[in-house]
Length: 107
Image 1: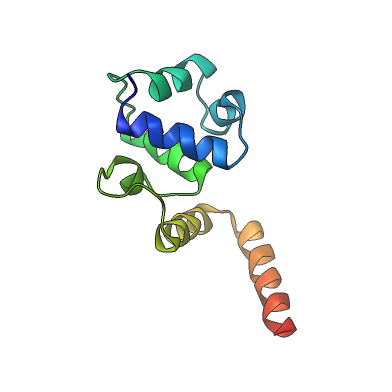
Image 2: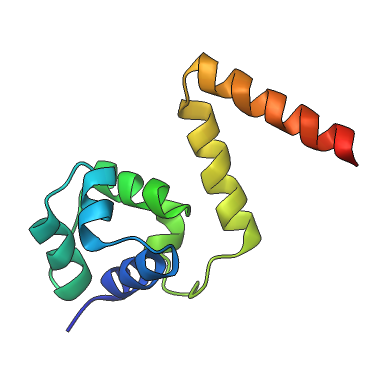
């Protein structure tokens, strides 16, 4: 029986249209390791691995381990995006800023 963590990861992966293999690649994991996390009750990924999984799914690691949060809120997704932005290289940050400027001009 899967853990709550595994269930959340599987549901989010499917909602985002990712295969198990795609999620494994995005998190630098093996497909079998990701299957274990999703399917077994005893899987306990490291904090670093949990952060990679959360980032690939567009949520925070806190959301994944919080039993009281079943569906991600807009706030959780915004926080996850901000974390990804902070870790991006300067070139990617500059591109994202230009995109936001264009979107702001359209309003």
